[in-house]
Amino acid sequence: MNALGRHILVEFNGCCPDILNDVAVIEESMVTAARNAGATVIQSTFHHFSPFGVSGVVVIQESHLAIHTWPEYGYAAVDLFTCGESVDPWVSFDHLKVAFKAANHSSIEMYRGSLSLLKRIDFKLKNDRKKMEEALVEPKYMRNLWFTDRDENQAFSLRHTGNIMFNETSPYQKVRIFESPEFGRFLALNNMVMCTERDEFHYHEMIAHPVMQTHPNPQRVLVIGGGDGGTIREVLKYPVERVTMVEIDEAVVRASKQFLPTISSEFGNPRLDLRIGDGIQYVREVEQESFDVIIVDGSDPVGPAEGLFSEEFYRNCMRALRKGGLLVTQGESPLFQEKAFKETNQVLKKIFGAEKVKTLLFFAPSYPTGMWSHQTACKGDLNPAKDFSQEKARLFTKEHGLKYYSEKVHESAFQLPGFVKTMLNENV
Ligand code: SPD
Image 1 (cartoon, helix red, strand yellow):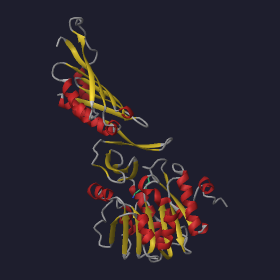
Image 2 (cartoon, rainbow, N blue to C red):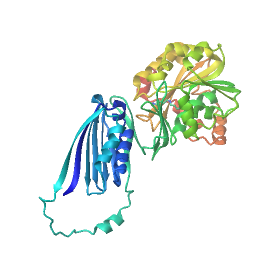
Image 3 (cartoon, rainbow, N blue to C red):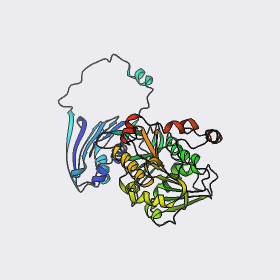
Image 4 (spheres, rainbow, N blue to C red):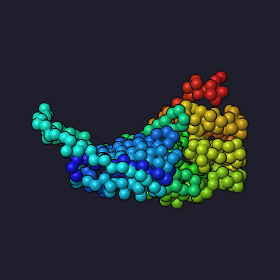
């Protein structure tokens, strides 16, 4: 080769749109393509555009590989630039053609820096390159991948390592477990964060303990959803007779058992009756007055959890509660899901009566906006904001080493800011 480098410009057509829209898969394919060609990878950075498309570059010791994808056209524009003789960019090309399932392609190859046209010059660098390399403390190769939980206007992003430990599309949703530098492993359903190892206890302690501390003798508990196991882990800290859990997606349970051991630690508990099935149908058919406490730990109102926000579902929950029983449901966010937050509250008030519904707020750092709610309702006269023993809650918190819930947090969580009271028509 009588040139400094080879540059191949490739058009991949008829590719799989799902692959072209998956930033992790694209990055993995580009890095592997570089390595297969004999290149030394220095760094890669990739970005997912909304709603479609991925851009990225892999910097290699021998130059770079770059890409932009248009999933909506099944098209990817790729350029592969390598210097020297040690790397063959056509090996990268072959790998990417298969990885993107390209039906056809076209390409041109150019030789860059023709040596017959260039003249070498004498020069002396100001800095000693060897010393500069030694001074580098940053890891030489760091991936720049982000998972984003978003609606049209707001988003929360978590950097992840690209190691997707579990990745399946079940009949209900895309179930994935990622690994992140700051929040540990996290479970995502479709494109929403469900729980992270670092802050899951905020959510799980606050969905379980306020109602469990309020009920004078909870023996039969029903959990709808909650497939990661965090909610039953908290409930089974009480001397309950039985916890029935109805989770629609066995893949969520399997993924959590395998990769989130601190969250799914109670799946082997003999007091747990785990049923893989539809929670909406379960409460429709279960005998009336079966439970002291019902906990609805579903995902957001899109996909399989949509029916968990309906009037019919909560009517059936009310029917399934014993007298004096308590219900709590993850109530979405007043800032991120205002509509679902308000509608859940209205439906509960319609069914249980306005006075019987109490909403609590807590910090949810890994959910968009960081402000989340659980909404409670009582089939009787208990008010979870007040009717609990501070002393019993204090001792329980201490005995079980709870990290978010305490008797004081319990009390204050029901104190709502003015703007939230206005949303719920409770500004009196
Ligand atoms: N947007 C996140 C809503 C989370 C709902 N459930 C989380 C499951 C944790 N057990």
